[in-house]
Length: 130
Image 1 (cartoon, rainbow, N blue to C red):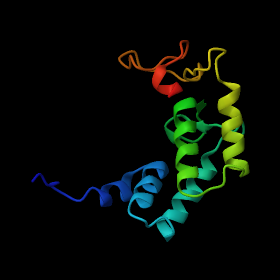
Image 2 (tube, helix red, strand yellow):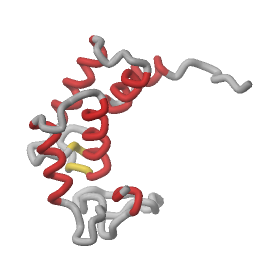
Image 3 (cartoon, rainbow, N blue to C red):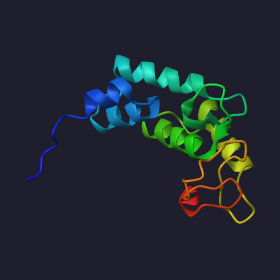
């Protein structure tokens, strides 16, 4: 039987993004804790005025399709209503950036490193659409 060398939860809880922390807490049924509330407040406070969430959850960064999707998915998985202002404004931002073929590409305002070949700011990316 394979075993983890160490318990990964302390690392995630101490160094993870609000999305990672909330997903981990949901996994172990501890979302309704002080750390869960703190990370929920932090995530909500990061939402940009346009409704999207900033690239890499860095304040004052352009909204990212990938990060906005992850934030919406996390928020709804932990029980935030899909009708809440935070979720509807994020979904509206995503819909505004959807391509005519139904797909998405990353926000052109975001610089994608050249070595990252699985993302694009000009062409729909299958995994974004899934």
